Length: 396
Image 1 (cartoon, rainbow, N blue to C red):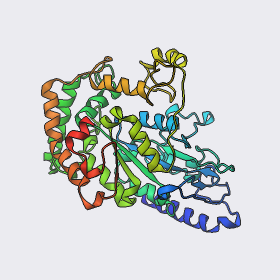
Image 2: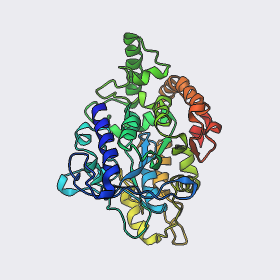
Image 3: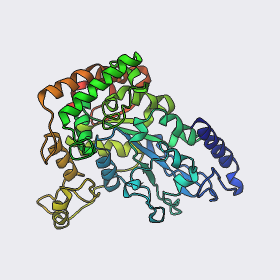
Image 4: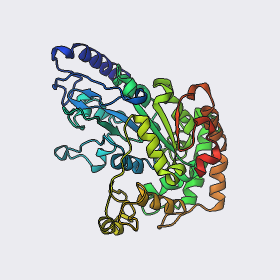
């Protein structure tokens, strides 16, 4: 991985230096034969506009997680309500799954990463010639879950790191575990294990692993230890809630002001403010599309049972104009949060066990937010970042 990142870095630097002569910017793999000039336009606040590499709009907006924290909803809302945001393009000939328009999995999947930067850029639109500002997005939550991703992305964007914007959505780690269980479908899947038994067994395995490998499970060391991923139906469900070490990696490789933390509960309650903040953060503008209620009612019934909701699926207002952006998705999220819509609920004992396990890790997160390393990191809807508390992280 280190060698690959180095080769990408060298190829990008050499290609950019020579592209004024019309040379191909080759980084190996598919699509490396395109020839372009690299360009950036500065918007208000110093935020960059379109970043063109190899004739394609290179992703500059990375929604890296955390998984089961509303990243899909945010990605959807950004396309509908923030000007110039564009997703990746799924190529049917390559038999890619539909979710690849949201999650590219380029930096975390070795088989994709080895195909080179040209392959990655091939999934994004061609650079516009009409002066439009486009902001390509890659919303792959594994970039936060897997150690080393910030370093790898920094290496691939050598010379362009000022263009990158990193967005992180956080929610109560206890609720994230419950939502993760629903996501895996373990009750009806191969494991056939109840939520409470799964939580109890997961916590037990983490502690046993910590004793075996002499890892303090209350410390950040757990994240980079052998106990991070327990395998099988347990995976990294528990370690995924260790936010502090996952976030700390990003301000080390990118200027803190290019990183934004969003409270999940705050996003559910104050979507308009969050989207306004995000638009300013990436250097774009907020827009308010109008959607007729009749169109929404046709989508409402199937959307309630869908795991994927399109950018137009918002709750219709009485006056025939769409309500707040992403209202339908957030209504479903809120229902899930309240254990409705068939979602599984934690019994008080399991919830208390998770809360107790995560208490020191939430304290590590709050300490990080107040540290010099995080100075400049943006926060929404509550700001500045050091004002975010454990309570407001959960309540919004």
